[in-house]
Amino acid sequence: MNFLDHHDQQVTADMLPCAETDPEMFHSTDAKDEAFAKGVCSTCFLQVSCRQRAREERRWGTWGGETEAERAEAGYAPKY
Ligand code: SF4
Image (cartoon, rainbow, N blue to C red; front, side):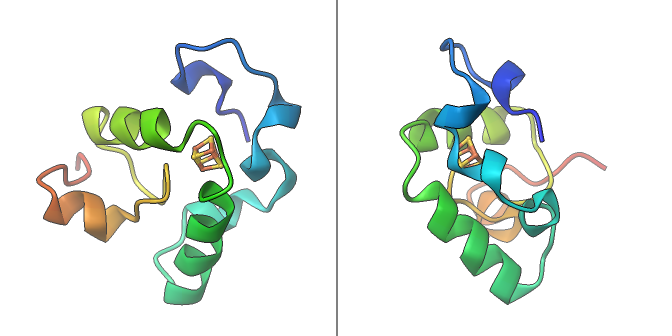
């Protein structure tokens, strides 16, 4: 999974907790998968900027510790 182009900062994959996990967990709407992804994001130093970028780009899945449904509730539903 490549998150490097989603951030303004210079980062390497080994700095991102999600790089060590199954990408499917971040693109699932299953509650267990979302909880897992949120837990991973909670340890990431890019959580705030990642969440904001996902909102701006109206992404699918869990980003920055925010699920797709939570993002939609905040007014940033995914593009269709
Ligand atoms: S906040 Fe989550 S999805 Fe975003 S880079 Fe960090 S671990 Fe990956």
